[in-house]
Amino acid sequence: MDCFVTKQKMTGANHLVWELNTLRIEIILCIRQKTWLAGKRADDGAEGLWRIHDDLYDFCSFVNDHPGGREWLSLTKGTDITEAFESHHLSQVPKKMMGKFFVRKARQARNSPFTFHENDFYDTLKKKIYKELPNIPKAPAARSKFLADILFFCYLSAALLAAYFKSFTIGTAAGIFLCLTAVAAHNFFHQRDNFRMYYFDFTLLRSRDWRISHALSHHLYTNTVNDLEISSLEPFLQYLPTKKHFVIRYMSWIYSPLFYAFIYIGQFTKNLTEIMITGQGFTWEMLLPFTVPILMVAITKEVTYVVIMFLWIIVVSSIHFGVVGLNAAHHHPDIFHDGDTPRSKEEMDWGIYQLDAVMDRKDITGSHFLVLTNFGDHALHHLFPTIDHGLLEHMYPVFLETCKEFGIEWKLSSQFELIKGQYRQLAKTIPNRYPPKALVKEN
Image 1: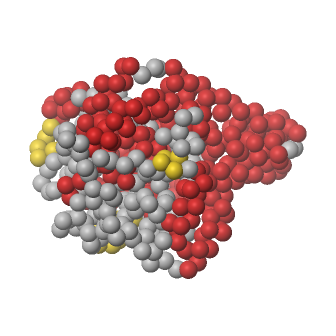
Image 2: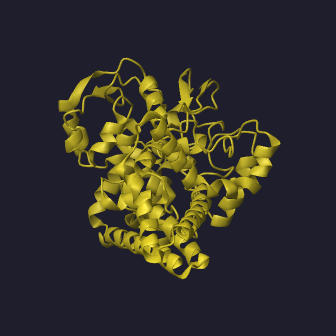
Image 3: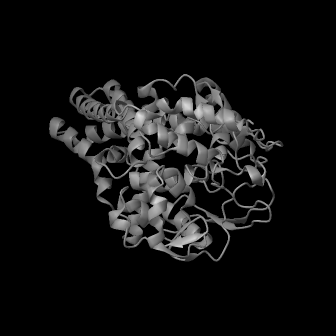
């Protein structure tokens, strides 16, 4: 099935990633992850290899030995993985071993304006965090695993009890537990391959797809036109400041919960349709969510009722997932969105940009459970996505010290303010005229 493809030349200084200081590229916007990757392969100048900064590498012989799992490299072959490489590796060891995979210099300049210069903000913060890691207790990471396991057990138990007692109240609880399980599982699909990442697949979504749309797209190019979590919501929800129809600006406040209700089902239907038409794309994880209704039928012997109850659980969970996810950190008029005036070329440090595109919630930060199940400690998670959520709270002293050193603002608000801001951003049509606060480094 051909997906809807939008091609556009991004012109003007306000389009951060796609034109900055005479840089022009043509980008393909599509909700399908494979098409997004195909667009990057066409635009990134990686020449069928892996590009990091201005160098090309051949990791074919290393794919199966990659400590994070083969999927990360197999997905990204033929693309520029600079942002992913820098944010996924704190140690200097990977950089030291890359020489044996070096092929040649790239023939064209990088499309992305983001920089990773030595001793700039992100490089400095990475070095400090890596030095601090041995002093951080390991128990919170083990607690994250325990919480994810407990949440999954609660989902499974509640789903079976809902079927047995024919209770939609218990079914609602099962839906909430499923959402909490999925958000907790998000912590694990950022890391090396592990079984807990597949808890996410019980929602009808696929962790493999989200490694592309979330980890490789949203995390690396947050709130830009190359962020699949922006483009895949359009035209129903439009967060970038541009000309919008009245219905999109204000009626989306009303119909967005209905949109949330079909996040899971819509994505699964799209995947299933593609498989039926192309004969490709099926993975064993797609069967995981249906193990639960099979168990429900085994208990009740009533297929029709179980189908209704399972759909109820899925819809409840999908709504909760949409509410939590879209109000977590990124959509507020004070947060940078593509179209707003960006920082100067000299301030295009990737870590600084991540803080421009994030706003944390003071009523979530500080609680391990809330952070794990509500996309908490979001700024630190974006800066260090492979580090377990349970460890992030121990990094704040170093993080805040480095922000102060470089004059970088860490935006902290409340959940209620972000919910209000999300609706204001939907209605916003005029980009911010002024760039985020200029960098003022301490002497």
